[in-house]
Image (cartoon, rainbow, N blue to C red):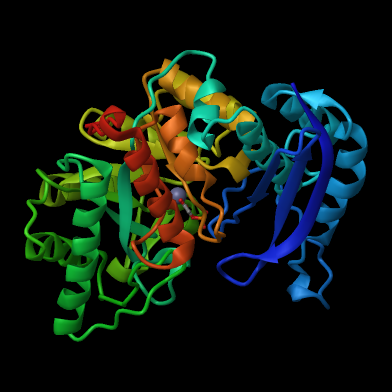
Length: 424
Ligand code: PGA
Ligand code: ZN
């Protein structure tokens, strides 16, 4: 049991220049942990509440001083001077909040405290953070290095005037190690810049460090990626698979999906046909949020049609929430969950979501948010929980690269014990 001496929170800036919460946790033996909270743009409507001040005179209403003050008052008062492990601290935060979606304290306040405590506790127990996370699992699971989903092109809400879909990623499934997989992915990222420039497109980057030109059609994006993979000397479908986060809630209205670039409005079944064609043609191995967050019937069609061949990942659909995941498992609406700590607001609830997914035979992909900080906890989280996959943006911009760099360090530290195995 670790006794919390003091909690100190502050408002800092994230990678978009938007305020976010950072928390320092000091334990009574002097062990110290600091954590910063990320923030989404294409936020799912069922996510836990990110508390913002709403004071239009400061940061356009996006300040987080209320959440900071909740750490210093309500939370500090109830936990300082007391002993906890991760689960009992998170249970105390959930009870203190008392709402189903952390709307009283703010998930940005609870996650800041939960994650800072995790870091301090890892220091106290003289373990690297990834090993501490591994110890939180209720069923033993071997740690492993993740296959990265490296972002190469972005659109949707993450880049102006680009493609309809949000994230186009490469997965070095055939690489022998994380370190090599990252090299392959970066070589592809650099090769794609050359392909784009040669064809007269700009290489300005979006929120997560990837290129976001207007290529005219969604299909053209896939063509450019294939060209980049080949130009870098890798074989699409063998060495490298393509992963897509459509973020379909963002182009869903009145029961239909509007693909502006294609000038088409599609039903769930028609959009599923569209994806099925991409699976055949472009080695699409993973499809996240192919449909909207409440289109459960559509998800069942999608999973039924493609789930045997393709990883069908629920992000806005599940929001790292065991209640929604339970429904998705029972209804066979997907075969994978995206894991974002701030969608649910504590470390323990995140671990529980991963364990529920694994018990049901689902895969789990640990993820960043489009607004990030220099906090690289998710690198340790993915190794500790042994989920085997991470998406954390392009191989550019420090808010993205800091996670990959931490994974390089972890792989070096684990040495021969570092397993890197394709989930497909
Ligand atoms: P967000 O995007 O952080 O803007 O929600 C990431 C994702 O949709 O996976
Ligand atoms: Zn997503």
